[in-house]
Structure formats: structure tokens, C-alpha cells
Amino acid sequence: MMENNKYRILLVDDEPDILEFLSYNIEKEGFEVHTAQNGREAIEIARKIKPHLIILDVMMPEMDGVETCDVIRNDDSLKNVIIAFLTARSEDYSQIAGFEAGADDYITKPIKPKVLISRIKALLKRFKPDELTEPNSKVMEKTGLFIDRERYVVINDGIELDLPKKEFELLALLLSKPDKVFTRDEIYSSVWGDSIIVGDRTIDVHIRKLREKIGDDHIKTTKGVGYKYVE
Image 1 (cartoon, rainbow, N blue to C red):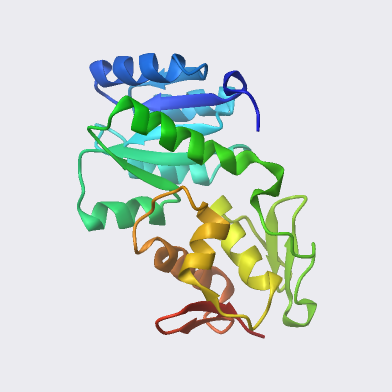
Image 2: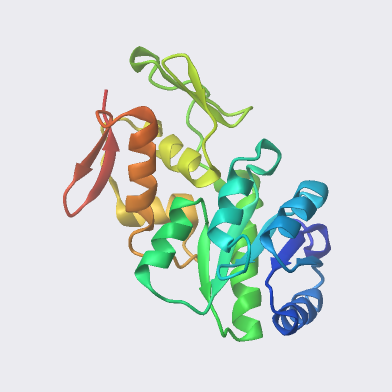
């Protein structure tokens, strides 16, 4: 694990008081903190500093958090950044929209500083070298689906797919043991980590996005249990 001062965190919120409060508490822990007050500014700063983590408010003028997240997730230079939404809204639909845009986590405000720091540290653990399963670099050649781990992309029938990080990790896990049914708990633990709290629909959203990209035939649902990859 890197020292805290090696991590770059970008805070994005249109309320200066919230930025000041968050910055103060996060910087006390030794993290390098940058701030932005809107989505467009956040994208510009992110491209310059390449943050490890972006804590992104959902409700912002001009470009909201979901739109900002979508732009970031489609930028190759930022494909590995972790994005956590920070919002006072707890409606299920807003969480679904966030995860569909590529968010990794969802933090509801107000949040106590110690809890926030704990969540941040848990999220940043994903940068450990052993955070991913280790399937072969090319998997299931007979189906025309390959994983290129060096470039962090999936090749499907000769077409290169640039998947968001969590989608890549989920597909890599399923491909690591074809025909094995991975339970929801196993998927949460392997892809999101035991210490990360995510919404109940998180896996479903990511599975649906994967099916849209590689087809419906290969990822099967075992009702009440989980998912598996089949030829």
C-alpha cells in the first residue's frame, strides 16, 4: 500500500463550505487534495493531475455528477481512477444512474469525517497489485473473447472494447473459471472488496452493461445465487 501522501484525491462540489470541510479533514490524513466546483473544471483538473480517487457531487449546475462521471469514464487516460459519488440524495434511481455512468461507490452526506476517511482508505486499497483475480491474459479463445491485461482491454470477435475498471474486473473474474457460478458475495468481495458498501443493484447494473457489450449469450444468471460465464 502506498503512503497517504502518494495518493491524489480530487473533490468536486459546487458548495465552497463543503469543499473546505472535506479538504481539511482529508488533508489532515496526509492525502494530496485538489478541488473543483463544477464538472467541467473537474474534468480539466483530472486530466492534468491523474487522481487516484474522485469524490464527486451529483447535483451540480451546468454539468451534473453523472454527466461528469460519464465523460471521465470515456477518457482513456483516466480509465483506472476510482469515482465515488457524494450526495444528499438517497433515491434508488440516482444510485442506478451513477453506477451506470461508471461510479465505484456511493457516499451519502452528511458523513462524519472519521467515516469518510475510512471509506476513502478502503477505496484506495484497490490499487494494491493483488486486488484483481489473475486469469490468463487470453481467456476462452474458442469464443473469440480475449482479455489483454497489459492494456486493460477486452477483445470481442476482433473488436477492442475499452471497459470501465469495474466491468473489466467483473468480466475477468467470471472468465477466470468458466461455468462456475460466482455468488453475489464472491463477486462483491473480489471486485469491490469486503470493506466496500455498495448498493444491492450494483452487480445487476454492471452485468447488464457487460451483456450489452459482449452479447447476452455468455453471461448467465443462476437465480438466487449469482452469475457464470459459459461458451
